[in-house]
Length: 77
Image (cartoon, rainbow, N blue to C red; front, side, top):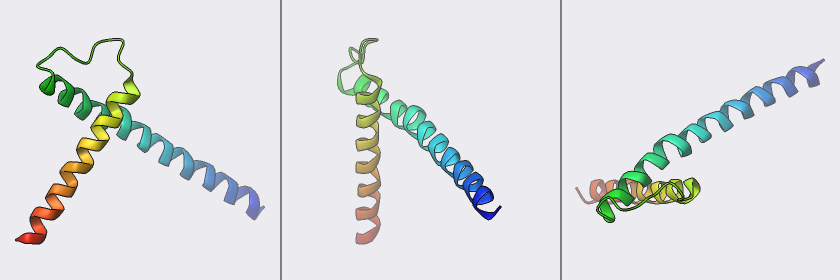
């Protein structure tokens, strides 16, 4: 009986982790990447045929760079 309950709890935990990571990458990282590409290319890119994964990865990189900048800023002051 304990194994069944433990399996159900693991399934629910994994589902919530997957759900929040999917929302993080599809909404937050994609939005940051899309805005970054629009600013850098003066509105010409990304187009509809652009890979959503590439835009989300760019957004994640920009988000990491912002966080690194914040950490460096607050360590000096």
